[in-house]
Amino acid sequence: MRDVVFTRRSGWIPNVVREDGELKLMLGAGADANHDPRTFTFSIGEAHLAVIREDLARHLLLWSAVLPLCDAAGTRGPLDENAAVALLDPILLAAPADVDATFRRIQWAKGPLISHGADIKLLERGQVCAAMRSATETSDAKRAQKHYADRRRAERGQVLDVLDTALLMYTGQYLHGSTIPRRLPDAVNPALLPDVMRVIATAEQACAGMRIGRDPRRGKRGTDKLDWKRMEATVDAAVRRTHPDLVDDAVRTVSFLMCSEAVDRTRSSPMDDDEEAVGDSATSGESARKTSLLFTDDKDGEKRWLRSHPRTATAEFWEFVADRYGSGNQVFTIEDEEMGEGLQFHFYADSLARITTARKGENGADPEYRVEYSLVDGMSGYRKVLGAFVRGGCAALDEHGSWMSDAADLERARRRRDAAAAE
Image (cartoon, rainbow, N blue to C red; front, side, top):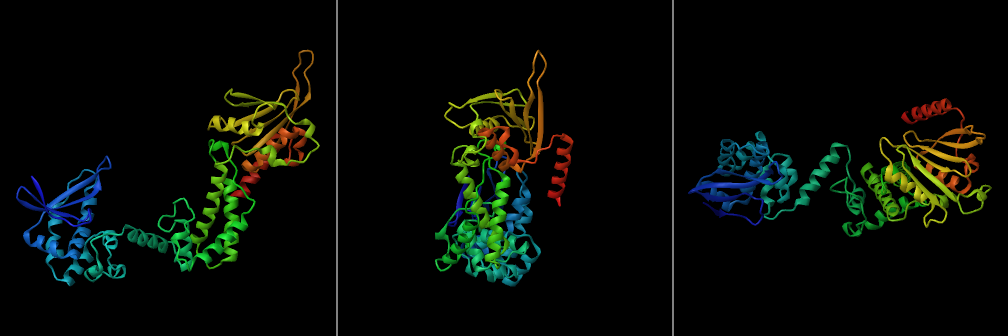
């Protein structure tokens, strides 16, 4: 039989219960193997109950001291009740100076005390009793989160000024840097909002016209990491140049915001139409615009596109890639059988091959093909080449690559590129 003897308004502060006639302190802490909260109890005396009832600060300090023992119990171990009981008199009944001395030699949890209004500077100086004069029964979890966020930044050498703080508040990344940023003007001091918006305007101007395209190798909603890095670098450079006093975290949150918004725009739009990306004006290869194409992969998958289809060839091809790309399926081909030409995409190596028929097979002989290779600048390069091929065939690809007839030359060029990127 368990009866609650004393409790406070905040549900996490330990309660005093009477169990089989014995007073016990009961608290929830940690979690079991199923991630459900664990509950611990240990015996206290009437004198301890009297202090707990009357002195919020001592009650909170006891909670802070017992929590590390609960953590040590893990997901299934028992609480070290002897160690918990040994904390009662030194924390609840001792003089303030002795309580401070106790906290200098034990482990204790700072977060709950900060959440309940403790003076952080006094806590850090070890003056725990004086720090608890400002304690409140209600808690503010964000106050502790803010403290730990500031401490993590300080460990990385990031000391925020008022504008740095305002930018992180604006993007919602002050407490958690991994949070997807968004625009929260109401979270910023109105007096600082114009300064924040000037920084945001610098970033917007820097990346105007840039986009983050899709990367079907990462699924139907996948986007191009290289495009992200380009936009991020562009925004970072512009913001640092125009606002040199901002710390790295503040610059990062602005570029993260720009890139995240660009990704949202991409994901909310139809699959890339790379034929349009090449340009609307007529080209020398316009008369060769494809009417029928065959898509294939390394796993005997195939799909045919006809010009009568409602979607463009490029959109259909990228969807074919998104549906079938995998670690063992990284070579895809788009072929115009009638013209005897095609493009082969080597996604594992950022390269491709254009294939044209040099001589048609006659009298049972196999046709002869001319194969030329080129490196590609990531997905943006693939998109440009694909769009050009659909509009004008292999004849339209001369300006979209440095074509090599020898595969060994391609391999040497790839090694030079990779070595330059690693420097």
